[in-house]
Amino acid sequence: MTSGSGSPSVDDGAVHTVREIAQQPRLWREVDRLVAASRESLDAFLHPLTARGDLRVVLTGAGTSAFAGQVLQSALARRLGLRVDAVSTTDLVADPRGCLAEDVPTLLVSFARSGDSPESVAATDLADQVLSEVHHLVITCNAAGDLARKHTERPASRVLLMPAESNDRGFAMTSSFTCMALAALLVLGGGAHDGIAERLARAAESIMADGGGADAIAGLVDRAPERIVYLGSGALKGLAQESALKVLELTGGAVVAGSESSLGFRHGPKAVLNERTAVVVYLSNDPYTRRYDQDIVAELRGNLPAGSVVTVTAVSGAEPAACGADTWTVPGLDGVEDVVLALAAVVYAQLIALRTSLARGIRPDEPFPSGEVNRVVRGVVLHPLT
Image (cartoon, rainbow, N blue to C red):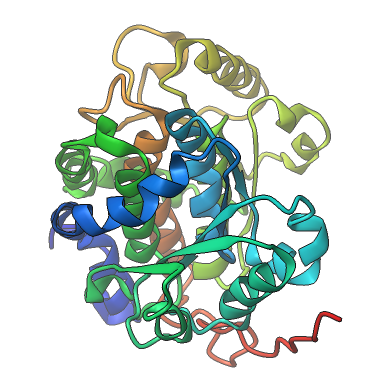
């Protein structure tokens, strides 16, 4: 983000959040170098596992960290040719025998900003308890966290630390989310994503520049929507979930936000719409999937006031759903997998949440000053599995 007149003021309790959104392109380049430097040891740990046809890969985390798994799941399944499931730690801890019902060799990939949430370590412990054979890949932003310290010296574990600055000090996860997801994609996706970090960084820099995406975002926020809905298909459904969570977090729940798939929205969730609702639809780069996204865009634009429905797309051209002032472009990513598109497009969502928070006089770095919701979850009682 630049310091132009359209940029949020860091004097409004947003110093950490503003910095952590803006630092993402630089940190993505650092993640790319970090993974490259660790490639030999990572491959030595992972290749014997991923070569096994009976391996199950489970992507786990809580909240935003769980949505990282949702974004990655289908792309990694295709790349690895293995069963890959996204299972939140909150589900795994509450129902370990259900989530891990099949006693098959498992690679548990844990995403954690701090690694200090009660469920983070508990999920790995329960996997060890329930399964006969489990290996752990821990991707975290905090070297001093409980999760990193527990798994650093274990032979069946590998800890991949993100750049220290990605351990966001703001309330909501921003750079931690994108750094961890990018790292997993580079580590588990193989050479298919060589060079993608630089393309992502350039796309995000363009979005954050004044005159890029900043003006369009300001226009949406100026409409003062009381509800914001995000829609997307496949990997972009995971992005939609993360986008809605950012609004809820940074506005302290003052703005209602929800998410669904483009097809699933008609099956009940559409009831949330009113004339004060803004809808953001992420258009898939896959031509087949994009047709369903375009259908819901056309339907919603016929039902809601002009300017209420925005599309976010990397596809240039004359497609009806990707034209006009209500289309926001992710530059330079036409043709990439949706999992890659999601990592740049989330910057739009982060900026919408930030600006919506500031517009309502809320401090994004601390949207819950009375402590009813915490940066690191508290109050969880862990019960023994007998």
